[in-house]
Length: 328
Image (cartoon, rainbow, N blue to C red; front, top):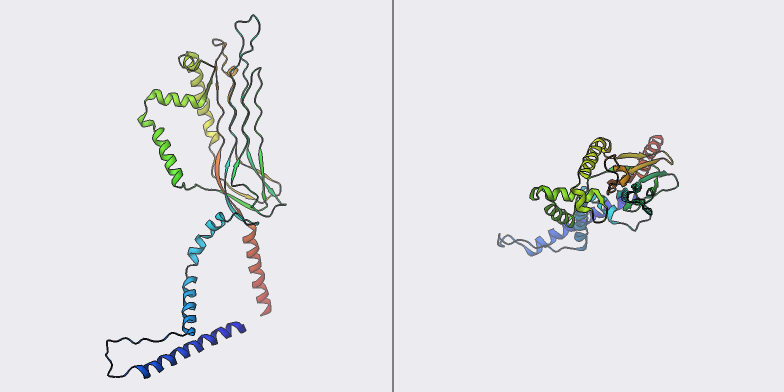
C-alpha cells in the first residue's frame, strides 16, 4: 500500500516539474512579437522520460490478448522445463504383420498342402492414469507401437506386437485435433497427390497399385496370380470382408478425462495381421500361392492438458474470496 502511494506522489511531482519547466521556457524564450509559425521546443528532463516509459508500459498491457494467444505456442516450444502441463503428441498403432505363402514340402510329394501362418496384430497405444506422476514432460511427442511379426511356414502365426503403455498424470484431458501441415508437408502431399492422382491413371495402373498394397505373392508368381481365376475370386472375397468390417472401424474423435486412478484407455489401435495362404484354400484351389499384407495402425493427433493447475488456481481464488468476506 505504501509503495502504491509513493508511486502516485512521484507522478504528481513529475507533472508539476514539467509544468513549471514549460512556463519558465515560455517566459524566457518567447514573446508576442515572435513568428506565429514557429513551434516552441521544450527541453525533456529525466522525469519526463520516466513518464513516457510508464505510458509505453500501459500500451504494452493492452496486448494481453496477443500474448494469451501465443501462450500455447510458447508451451509447445519450451521443451526444457521439468514441469509441463500442455503438450501435443502423435500416436500410431502398430502395423499388422504380413501373411506367409508356404507349403509343407516332403520327399516324393508332388502336391502338398499350404502351411503359411497369419501375421500378428499390431500393438496398441494405451494411456494409464497414474497418481504417481505430476507432469507431462516425460511423455514423448511421437509415440509408435511395435509392429506385429510376419507369419512363417509350418502354420506358425506371427506374434502380436507389444502394447505400448504410457503413464500420464491423474486428471489429464485428452483431446483429438486436426493438425495444420507446414510448408514441407504441403509440398510432400502435393507431390504424392500428383503421383497418385487416380484421374490421370488408367484402370490397369490403379488396380496394380491397389494389389501391391494388399497382396503377397509366391516368388515368380506375381503375374501368374493376376491371371488366375482363383485369385480373382479371393480378391472379391477380401473386398466383401472389408466392406463388412468398415462400419465397425469408424471412430469418433477422442475427448477423454483420465480421472480414474490406474484406468487404461486405448487411444490408437494396431492394425490386424494379414492372412496366410491356407485362408484361401478351397476344394477347387488346393495350392493358393498368395496371401495378404497387414493393415496399418490407427494414427491420431492428440492434445494432453493437465487440468489440476486450473483447478488449483480456482480453489485458491475461492479461498481468497472467502478470507476477504470473513475479514470484513
